[in-house]
Length: 202
Ligand SMILES: [Zn+2]
Image 1: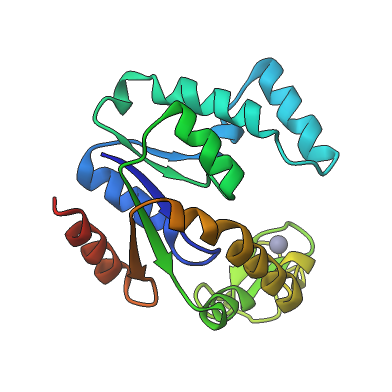
Image 2 (image 1 turned 180 degrees about the vertical axis):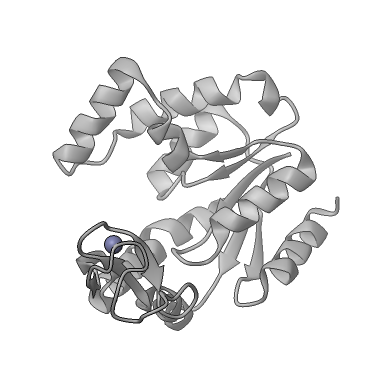
């Protein structure tokens, strides 16, 4: 079964994809991980895009994905996570593979802001914490080095809401393109997984 998992930041999509991959015995293909795992010339090229603040081009991403899908462990399917992020990419993806089912893990913007809002990091060693879910022993200090904890610009509420806006605008049109199952992501990890599995009828 070729599955596509979609959801906003903090929806728990990555966690669910990993659990589901184990359950179904198919690989979890995260495009973020896939890009990070590249080596040699492709690695240098990816880095040059990141350094200049540009997105890695669709055509190149598709080529990497196509090669990944051709590996033997994908014979029974896969769980794709992180691509496509907009309608254009979805159309391009359809040229190289046929997605059987799309699952959206849905959480409200308020919940996403709540989950992401507690994120702080050490200004000295960059270790990350979440004051809500994985708090440091001392709320003002890094457990590892005692450095001060700050909220990164990316974790400020304005930035989070901006990303959610992009998600709603760009990603949701993809959902209309496929037969979609919507799962309430504001439940426990176990319950979300259970509903995904049920929806697949496996
Ligand atoms: Zn630190």
